[in-house]
Length: 291
Image (tube, rainbow, N blue to C red):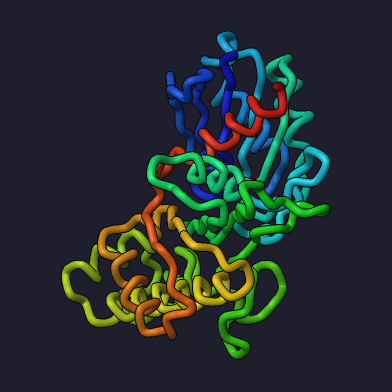
């Protein structure tokens, strides 16, 4: 069965046809609309999927935010231009005429990475560091979603009680500090107004402030990983996302994690499926639901 998989993130929308053997075909991308209206997202999704939907038999959606009964309930509306509620499943079913399901994007990516080559544990956590910070938890071989869909939202755990206010309403969340938005928000002087990608470029060139901003994010993530190990006793943590997979970032996380007591150490890996993990995980979950 061919699945039309869709990944809705804070920066981009992606779609692809995925066969039962997890081969990706006809991948497409569009920028996530900056508008705060549901109509803008609906129009962008229609533009994204119309060229490829005729070949699919079902739709699987991976989206940032909490997915509750097929509706996107954004824990940090800033990541989607202020959008708070959006009927994901209903919208895509209407556009395509196909049965649809939806799951949080980091939960989906966790499920894909759990099935990646080289994973030899039933207890694994996936963390994505991108526009925001998200996560997915697999314990004893089962993906944890939670009754309200909140399970795995690791970016909204506390990093600094005196830190910046997060878009979710709490102060000092990991996401407010370690994410691409968090990195950019702390920039000062000549780096003010630059996005995380530009700041990483400056860091690689040796710019002192840029290097400190990236290091602060990496240290915050390492402390989060130690906390996650304490809570779940996971043996492997996989890191993905545009920041998480940026050149030199994961090695810094590993250095900071190595400074923690050994009981908090884990096998640290970059995402095998990289930026396609959400698409593949959604397709895997959809295929499993049909069996």
